[in-house]
Amino acid sequence: MIAMVERYAPGFADSVLGRQIFSPLDLERIFELIGGDIFHGALSLNQLFNARPMLRQGAYRGAIAGLYLCGSGTHPGGGMTGAPGHNAAQVIPRR
Image 1 (cartoon, one colour):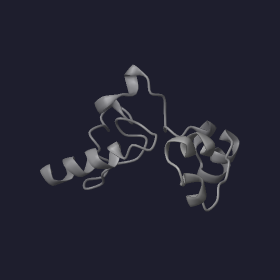
Image 2 (cartoon, helix red, strand yellow):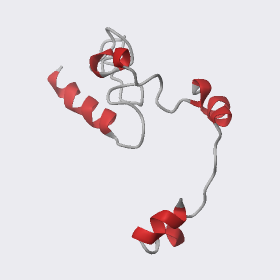
Image 3 (cartoon, helix red, strand yellow):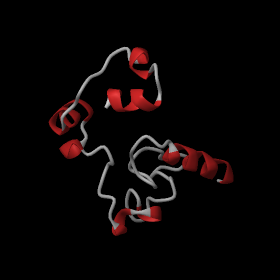
Image 4 (tube, one colour):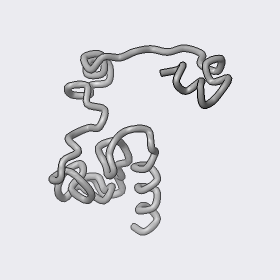
């Protein structure tokens, strides 16, 4: 993977200070991600948009007043987009 990025971004390989590979079992044991699921739940139709992470807990609001959610369990899901945090930050000032 590093070699692939290096083709398009020369010097990238030299900027890598270290790397570690985690299996799904490692992710479950170390970070308590059930089944090693980095997306915190299925990205299925019944768990998208305001139904993420679950019905009545969408729109980045937590179960406690003033608690907001911004992780992979919120819309649009996991990965490294930063979108859940950005979206939560847009909702908070409106409350």
